[in-house]
Image (spheres, rainbow, N blue to C red):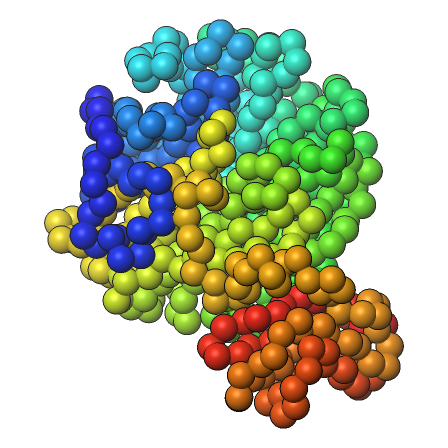
Amino acid sequence: MKKHFLAILFALVSCGLSAQEWNVPVEGEWFFELRDVVTVDKGDCVLGIGCTRTEDGYVARVTKEGDCLCKEVHLPGMMLDYFTAVQLDNGNYMVFGVCDDSLCDYNFQKYLRVDVFDSQLEFVSSRVYDVDDDMFDYFSYPRDGNCMRSIVTKAGTAVLAARLSFPEETFYGINYRNAMRFYEFDNQGDTVRTVDNPFELADVGTIKEITYEPHSDNLMLVVQGGNYGYDYGTCGVFVADTGFNIVAHQSMLHLGGAEYIADNASDGMWFDGDRLIVDGKQYIGSFFTYHTLYIVDSALNVYADLRLPPYDTCTEASYGTNTAYINDSTVFVFSFSGNNLYFGNEMQVNVTLVDKHLNLLGRKVIKRDNVIHYVSPPAAFNDGGCAVFMYSSNGLHYPGDPFRKFNVVKFRREDIEITWDVVQEQEAIQKQAHASAYPNPAKGTVNIPIGQNLLEGARFKIFDVRGVKCFDHEIDRQGNLITLDVSNLETGMYVYQVVSGGNAVTQGKFMKE
């Protein structure tokens, strides 16, 4: 167990991370992955859980002041990977994972591990369940890192929604049929109940979030569809009653103009009584990916969507949600992007700010030379800050990489100056009357207020929801209003941008009927 305190920025991130409140180095193995980061201790701390490269369990607790405790859990001869954690009513942390011997099939994990830690990450209790117990089945170890999610019930027990694997012999060998099952545990990790039969939800992918509905005792689950996502399965939102019966479902396939959605996630924070933000990775063609935010209410209605920048490169997110809801005007969204994710020499982290209505406020890009950057799922502190675990590398994937660093970075909206490459933070622009496009929706023409004179060479650009540029033309006259014929555009949502002097002076979106 190790403890670290507030530290000055590493040289490798000093250029790109000058905006955060603090940055703390995290000791550990040369490589580890965090499957989830959750808010604990009433927002005073966040808890990150996952595994090291040698398949030991990994837990890190970070306070809002920057103090960090880390713990590696080694099981001799066994692989251990933590996937989800909750804080119990007594203040302890219950952490769920899967484990098996080092020669096992990754898709076919035999043991469920339930560990309970105190606030100093000392063991309180530990339980191991295997498939020889009547109530358990083989657990799937998905490539995207989310085979289970958990929640503390209103009665104080812990409910786990886990993805299962059922091996089936076919002509081509062994395939895996997937399903989902609920388990309930007391505060020592002993089982309380489980459903008799697993839910075979047309190839359930992975469970990304489980939360209570705001107006009932029902549970809402954000689920990725298919074995590993892609264009099949049950990607969307499910509602389960108190008996763990699925009573409602909303598919989120083919939303926003994408060919298919490979991911769904949420931080589970409700606002305006019954709405939450869901993020999803969408595919255009076989390889081009981008992230979109949706608003979903407790009746499973899907509202406005927002495609996140950048628009010209593939975008990925962390294993869990990439959003952290702070308040009505501050939702942090984290992603990483590059022209060739995983095999390129460069990957940047995007810190995007939106409000609860999915209005795009701006983006900060964390980038330095040819360094590859990744981020964990974010989690919110109670002081308005947001924490992410960040991993940086120069692209060499072996022990002793001199440029490989692990840090916990805390962002606060009021402490950072956003580098606005999407919109500018100018009070005059924000307060302009009629600053939105009209009429909206538009049929024949649309009017775009500018509110100021433009410099020579100013350009007007329009992008569709896929990020494809539909219009890019120099503005050849002065004035504070642009009127454009959009009758030839296809029906759908469009993003517009007016660029003057290298800055986006006006941006927004409109619907073409």
